[in-house]
Image (cartoon, rainbow, N blue to C red):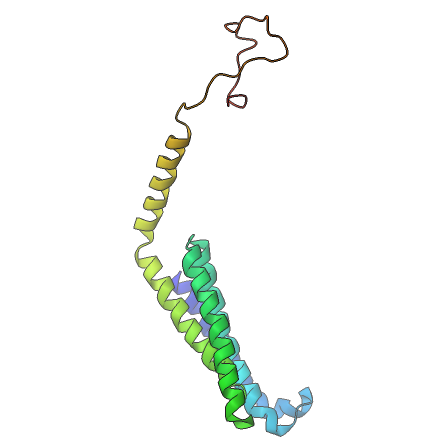
Length: 170
């Protein structure tokens, strides 16, 4: 998992670095004003961190850690709102920094939670399997009464053809 994430992030990091370096020549081609170059560069760097956040949090969700995933998403939402409002309050020279800081902090937090989850993956896997096994045994306990055949009351209940199956037990 770490190797795959490292390979993807290395490739994406190289592409983002190239895009940041080539952004001055791309400003006129994209149709931006030169004053917007800083926001473009911050957006490219934020995209790197946002991808890291999405990749790590998706793996956390895949590993059946819904509470941690929800906490990550809520942190991302709150930090986006908070840091964007702060950057708007500070003025146009700080536009883009709120998104970058929110993405970077969320990425670092999601990587930390992923590392903690992967360190405990064997325990978490067997604990989940044990919980499913014990809960399925509790559900399978015979706490039902035998169903009667309401359509033919004069049938022999010991006849194997009219015995209720597991779907008919109440």
